[in-house]
Amino acid sequence: QLAQRGLTLLTGGTDCHLGIIDLRPQGLTGAQVEYFLELAGITVNKNTLPGDPQPPSITSGIRIGSAACATRGMNADDFTLIADWISEIIFAIKTPNITDICADIRQKVTKLTTNYPLPYQ
Image (tube, rainbow, N blue to C red; front, side, top):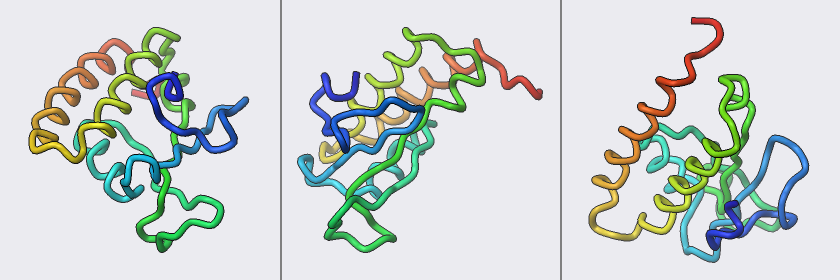
């Protein structure tokens, strides 16, 4: 889903619950993307890439995982929404209204997660 939206996945994709997005084509850092996704209520980790020109505290990639959403019982349609939100934020980071976009997506994330309470609550 993310590759179809114009994002570069390290190794071309993944067969497990983790994936790495290379942010160099967008001219962004992992630290930037991690920050704005967090504003939107989406947790990722900045992650170094092979031959990464950025220091480990900045990075050129992010790591995403599906375990938390799968634990909540989310389905393929939900993952498609999340992929849409992630890509929307990444491609909007350099725009002046990025904080408004993050706030809008945060409301959508809150609405989605309300339908899938954590199993230990």
